[in-house]
Image (cartoon, rainbow, N blue to C red):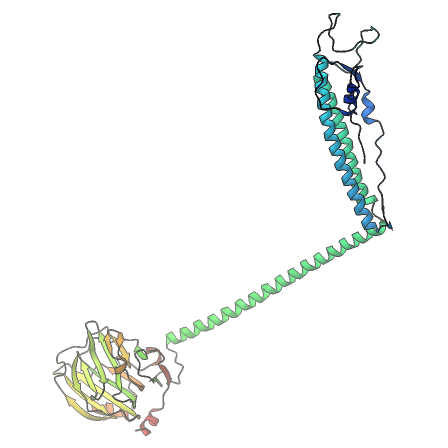
Length: 452
């Protein structure tokens, strides 16, 4: 182990007279001085701290079994040097404690009582020459402490220089040439791998950006196509060959399958309603259509409920119609009404089967209501009853604001005339379906006639 001189700072004090004084000067004893003791202060040259005598011991580079590999030797050298440095630091700490003791003793030397000659008894005279034995050391304790501090700082600087040299030697000189070459190669390999990985990440980033852009473009194209389709529907573009060549299918008796006419009715003093129906539901086909307004859910209703005949309701007044259409075949139905005396007429397949009066006479049909296909309304646009739902198919639902002539109704029924309603025409973009109701292409008028 590397040992630094304990008293290299420049002072060595001993007890005067007794063997205990020599032991205190050599080992820096921690005990208090006995009463009446005196000190002999002897100076040491300042260059004692820099005197050689602390050589660095050789570091063993071999194990018990012979030469070690370069890596193991390097590790052993570093560990030994680290241990040596730690021991030197510990020694310096111990020396600082000894210096503090010596400083206290110097203070006691200066504060000793005067001698017989009446002069200060701080220093022991030699040969009567009047020269103190401290040599060139000043009498000021502060100066002594400063000088000791400078000496300790010099020792500390030397130690730090030694540590730097050791690190430099271990880092470069202690490494074999082949080991340095190998480490350099490994560092270059790691650098190449890092650059390669960075290039891969940049490539993946570019590909991801391109893929995201492509996906965004596809999504935008799909949305644009959907918007165009919605716009076409709003403009009235029909998916059928002709806007009126479709039918509404209501296959189940429920309270959630229905169709809704987007347009509403104006105030009417007369009307004609015509439609094609096909149903085989029993008992009763249900409600082909209903028109409700605020305050009156049964403003205009056509219904066959249970075992009752088909009824026309206007302002909740009832007229029974002599119509029979629950045979599962297509039938053309027309109903006319006028507020004058409440006159009504019923046509099936172009023929007038019944007429009557006093059906809500002098009552105008109120405007702004909701027109529903396939359900009877208990409130405006809702509260449907499944037992009153229509089951079957319907098409060509048209409403006029006048009473059509019988020959016009016949021409419509035998397919010789196509007369769309001037109030409610049968067109695709005017009919919405809900709850599972569907719109399908309808048979031609001639095919429906063959079904009669």
